[in-house]
Amino acid sequence: MLLNNIFPRNRVYSFLLCASLLLCAAPKALAHAILVRSTPAAHAVVHGANVRIALHYNSRIDASRCSLTLTDASGRAQSLAMAKPAGPAELDAQAQGLAPAQYVLHWQVLATDGHITRGEVPFTVQ
Image (cartoon, rainbow, N blue to C red; front, side):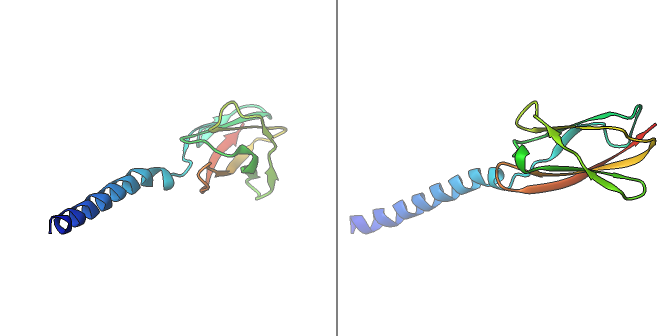
């Protein structure tokens, strides 16, 4: 009779322990790479035909599986080659020979947790 009273209690404690561990791990499993800041900043006006692109995220990304595409006002898109990133949560590139116009930088990153995130940064070249 004593064992019958102890066994259910241990099962409840085991269940609560497992549930607590799963809840603690959930935020990391659901994390996405969020753009924290960019150069140029969204809606910025930059001067000159050569523009340095630097994107900083809130978590590590797999830079080898990320992409950057620059679209001009006419809709013409060009892929940007990425430079070696300064850190594990950054993307760097150089856009060269840009004419004065409005542009949108489209980015797609793969976080190291396996989630893909996309976004855009509009800016103007004068």
